[in-house]
Structures are given as C-alpha cells and as structure tokens.
Length: 425
Ligand SMILES: Cc1cc2nc3c(=O)[nH]c(=O)nc-3n(C[C@H](O)[C@H](O)[C@H](O)COP(=O)(O)OP(=O)(O)OC[C@H]3O[C@@H](n4cnc5c(N)ncnc54)[C@H](O)[C@@H]3O)c2cc1C
Image (tube, rainbow, N blue to C red):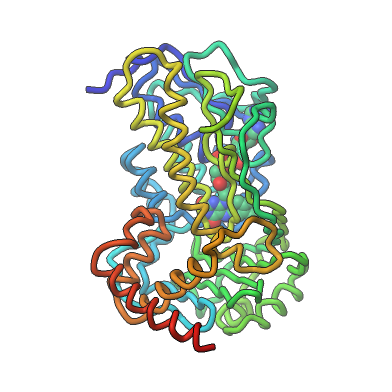
C-alpha cells in the first residue's frame, strides 16, 4: 500500500512544464509535500507564457505519452476530452503522406488526443492541483539547485542551466530545423473535421507540413524545413510554401482558413541527449527529467511523452524503494535513459538520412534504414505490421517488439525483397 510521506517529508521540483507536472504526480504518493517551483506566472487559462516559447508550435501527444499520464494521474484522458481535445481515430481520421505514398487507412483500434500545448499543460496543471499534497509556487525563479529537500527533480527544459556544471557524456545531432506555425479558424466547409494531416516527403527533401485539429474546432498548421531556414514568416509565404508540398491537402485547407495568430517561427539547431546515468558530479538526491535529459527533433512529437515516461520510471523506482534516498538516482537514471533511447533512435534514424545532419552514423546505418523502409512497405500490405509500427513509433511498445513475432516475420520477408531490389540498383 502507498502511504504519503513513506519516503520523506519534502520533495522539490524545479520547472512546472509537462515534465515537472508529470514528476509531481510521480512523487506525490511518497512524500508528505511536493513543491513545484516555476519562474513564470502560471496562467489560470490555456494561454502561452514566456518560459515555454515552443508552446505556440504543434505539440502531438503520442499514445504512449497519454497512457503514461493516465497511469500517473487517472482521469487525465477524460479531463483532456472535457477541455476540448479533438479525438482523432487511427487511422480513419489521419492522412499521412510519407515519402512517396499515403499510409493505408485502417481501424487500428486506437485514438489520439490533439490540442494546443498551452491547453495540454493547463489540463495537466489542474489535474496535479487536485493532488492534496502538491503545491505549485509560480513566479519563483531558481538560480541554484535546491539542497534542503529530501529529493529534488530538475525539470527546467531544453535550456536548463542548473545542471550545466555536471559532466555527463552527450549525444548531439545538428538538425537545424525551422518551424512556422499559425492557428486558424476553420472555414464552414471544414467545420467539425477532425482530420490530422502530415506531409513528410522523401529525404533529402526536407520540407514538412502538419495540420493538427485542436480545441475550439480550430487548426494549428505547421510548416517546417531543415538546414536553410526557409520557412515563411508571412501569411502569403505560408500559403505558397504549403502549395509547393507534394500533396494539395494542406494548401486546400489554408485557402479559406481564417488566421487567429500571426505566423510564429521557431528554430532548433540541435537534438541533445545528456547521459546522466554515466555522469560524474551529479549530487545524490538530484534527478533530471524531461528535456533536461533528452531534447529531440520535435518533428517526431516525442518530448512530452518521453517526459511522462521518465516520470513513470521514477514512480516505479520509488514504489519499490526502501532505505536511503541517496541511491534513487542510480536506479532511476538508467530507466529514464532507456525511455529516451527508444525515442532518440527512432528520430535519429530519420534525421541521419539527411546528408546535411551533423552526427555520427552507426556502421550499420544503411542496414538500419533498409529495415525501417521494409517495415514501412510491409505496413502498407499488412495491418498487423501497421499496428506494430504505430505502437513502436508512439512509444506504446518497446522497439524490441519488431524483432520477434508474426509482424516481425512479415517485415523480414519485405526486407529480403527490398534488400534484393537495393542490391540490383
Ligand atoms: C518547436 C517545438 C515543437 C515541439 N513539438 C512537440 C510535439 O509535437 N510533441 C511533444 O511531445 N513535444 C514537442 N516538443 C517538446 C516539448 O515542448 C517538451 O519536450 C516538453 O514540453 C517537455 O519539456 P519539459 O517539461 O522538460 O520542459 P519545458 O516544457 O521547456 O518546461 C520547463 C519549465 O521550467 C521552467 N524553468 C526553467 N528554468 C527555470 C528556473 N531556473 N527556475 C524556475 N523555473 C524554471 C520554465 O518556465 C518551464 O515552465 C516540441 C518542442 C519544440 C521546441
């Protein structure tokens, strides 16, 4: 049985973004009080704030992230729906142009929730505030890692400075992605449509577009490029960029959509993974979480879900913990690293296909790409492979699930065919 305070009197979390909120739910069952500190004033409404400038861009919550949040705070899915999240059925409500073809439309038995990042965070904050022993203190910037708590979690995000003195090995990819996003009211002909559209052409074509159906029956539309920062900063340019994509579906929706915001741009130079499990100088009882550990290429929509996965790893470690909290980091960090690893390897595999991405390509990279392509081709033909591909990509299942079972055999068969074709070329 779980008893509040079983492991300590006070836990502190710095950063009340998605990772900090998820961490507070993970710690609440084990400490008398959990204090969540953030430098921003946290609004009592789903609106943007300074500390998370990325929140104006599309934020996809992967299915694995939704399940992790639900397990941390039961009722979160219902709260997201009650706050207006759009429920997108997979794949009936999804149109994904991937490389050179539309993905097959089939009932995979899953649905995904879409809303703006501000709204996700607002719902999660309200969920956390229902936990009796969690206190959120906003307008509280933290300059140095707090030392007076029984356990401290650092959730200060991609730009973290609190752990900058810790010497941890890093994996870095020079991805140079740029985004332009606009929130739109739908024209009458599209009202009620809950279609999620993605257009992801074949590398080295580095353009990319997304239509995300969010709360209030609105769209958040994002256009991306890599390397040369070509995404538009005005509405005419936005429409023209969408019209040049290989499929017309995004441009069609933009024709009569009414902009509700200006074009907002965001640029990310690097994806970065800090291997704290191999760090020296990380004080005991200090645990990083979320983007502080790994910040990905956002194209793959993984950050919030990985943060939730880290929090589940922490909760699971604490649930079986007895004795000094000094040892928690050594148990938690490798588990958190495994959550990051799956997301990182899925994203890096695609990132590294672009010749201009700076990063180390593994010796077997050509084979890895061939395997991934075989899985994509097999998913067109076989529903069970499409389902497995969705579950791995959405962090519902471990990537090891692709190595055994009937779906894996279908992929292997496709790999023999595509490998043969590649050798013939
Ligand atoms: C352009 C872009 C698009 C993205 N799209 C997606 C997507 O589609 N899906 C997805 O899952 N993820 C996406 N992400 C990633 C996602 O934003 C993060 O991974 C996720 O929010 C988890 O971040 P976090 O909580 O670790 O950090 P953040 O969300 O950055 O939160 C950090 C918090 O710490 C606070 N803080 C920082 N320093 C201090 C301090 N010294 N004292 C007190 N408070 C402090 C900040 O105010 C903030 O509240 C995207 C990111 C970018 C940049």
